[in-house]
Image 1 (tube, one colour):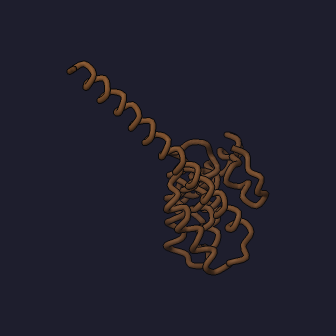
Image 2: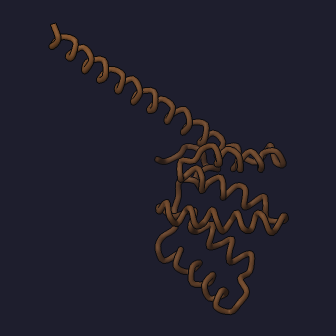
Length: 153
């Protein structure tokens, strides 16, 4: 799903296995040494969010939320990438929540504004799909009921 919004391209791109492996290796090396830097944790969380795996994206969100809670000076970056992670997981309510936190402090932030457009478009698209499914289900149910009524006559 390519985007025409250059600032939101981050939400659609992913890292290669080798690129993510470099971040993973650094993170776990620091764990073994007994101290993980915020930067290594952030980099690994960011890389996980950029993956194409929902499990890895969920793990990335978890790491970034830990940083968000523990380090107020990193909330800006974490808010955006947590929002990207939730967007990629199609959890648009949480994506919007974290993106709006950033927009409250930086209303002119082009990345966050572009991501907001992606989120709004996805909500609209999924709403139309949901309405189509409901309409299709209602039509099938109507045909089924009509055929039952016809058989009883």
